[in-house]
Image 1 (cartoon, rainbow over the protein chains, first blue to last red):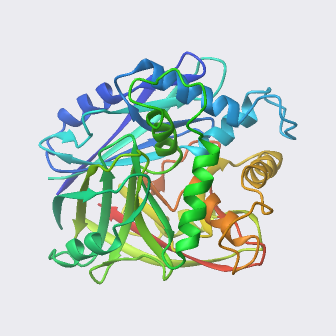
Image 2 (tube, rainbow over the protein chains, first blue to last red; image 1 turned 90 degrees about the horizontal axis):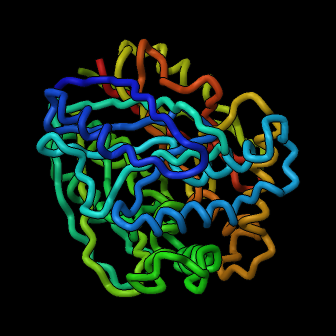
Amino acid sequence: MRQALHRQTIATNGQGLVAITEPVCRWVAAQPIVTGLLTIWCRHSSASLLVQENAAPDARADLEAFFRRLVPEGAPYRHQDEGPDDMPAHIKAALTQTQLSIPVDSGRPVLGTWQGIYLFEHRTAPHRRELVLHLIGD
Amino acid sequence: MRQALHRQTIATNGQGLVAITEPVCRWVAAQPIVTGLLTIWCRHSSASLLVQENAAPDARADLEAFFRRLVPEGAPYRHQDEGPDDMPAHIKAALTQTQLSIPVDSGRPVLGTWQGIYLFEHRTAPHRRELVLHLIGD
Amino acid sequence: MRQALHRQTIATNGQGLVAITEPVCRWVAAQPIVTGLLTIWCRHSSASLLVQENAAPDARADLEAFFRRLVPEGAPYRHQDEGPDDMPAHIKAALTQTQLSIPVDSGRPVLGTWQGIYLFEHRTAPHRRELVLHLIGD
């Protein structure tokens, strides 16, 4: 049994979903571990992780629109210091995932055919986001 | 330290919660690992996982009704190709879990007395859903 | 490779977020494992886990207020036996996390600068909540 740890920076372009399946799977494939458990940790409270439909861009647009309606920027939040998009960002992060753990088989995370892994940027401005990848197995 | 990997198919009857505590615990009990970490991965983006109250059926009906109100089928989604229940299914999956990892002690996941594990089917039609179970430990 | 398992009781004061970063990190630091994966499991379906902004108390108040608005106590739930706060508690738990797994590096969970780990109590009355911590690594 062995493990590997990796820090991966992802550049975002403001609010929306950024596909990270490819860099994540590439890192896993480069490790000597072929069976095990991959964990992805997002080190932020205004960006998060999501597993979603990887084929239809419209599905991702609908998903982003749903979260904008559910957590509007105009609501009377007390926490306003960092701009109107900051508190909705924290709430959207709370409603999605900060972490995903995916079993790995034959050197690949066992994603379904239609599953993609996404970093969900909740702030309006572009950011550099840091993920920590951890892999344990044989 | 050792690990085990298993694919489990669950038949669903259309929208709603399907209890999976028993088949999951049965597989764990059959493994030679008694202390460790169990991970359940749902290989779909229109079904998800949930830990809920395992006693009151009314609580599950209320939970299903809440998600139907929060993510109505009639909303003007762009992604309509796969029917009116498809986009709400993706959103409900995003709001719940694709993965659960549960510590295992004495050969059993450490669920609380009132906790059950559920597969949450979000599509109207019955489906066969595939879960991947991964167990690592001693 | 080794592992450790620990049960931690957290007292809550009724609805709201209770910071648990410190007791969790203290337990991890006391283990002989310096690189690995920490899992926190909440053994309840009316309390949950959350990663949030650890600096601004206003952000936590806004977050609690958002969930109270999204899942109001007055809605016509069928499951009323345990009081008007019980069904909203189950729904809020479903919308947040029952489990978190965090990579550990140099004896510390790899939390970002602004990330804190919280137990989210959803019931009105104070409770004693049980968490299970599991650590695997070297």
